[in-house]
Length: 76
Image 1 (cartoon, rainbow, N blue to C red):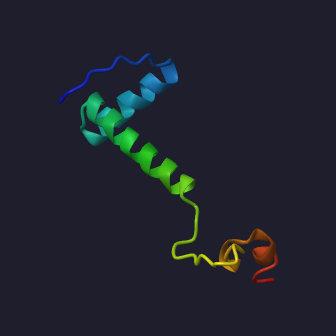
Image 2: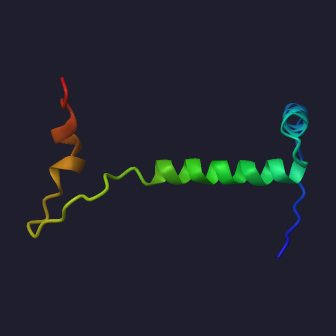
């Protein structure tokens, strides 16, 4: 399914779009789609800043690998 949007660009953004279209040889729509993919990937990486594989304990004490107090002077 295709979905059309309308975007209002300031002069600076319009010039950037024109440069990207010219340099990459893409359509303006493709530049916007790829930009959304990059933004999504970047946002999701920041959002999921947890250490993979952290243990969960019956005591309820969080794993030392995610405890900022225990990591404060690590490597110094």
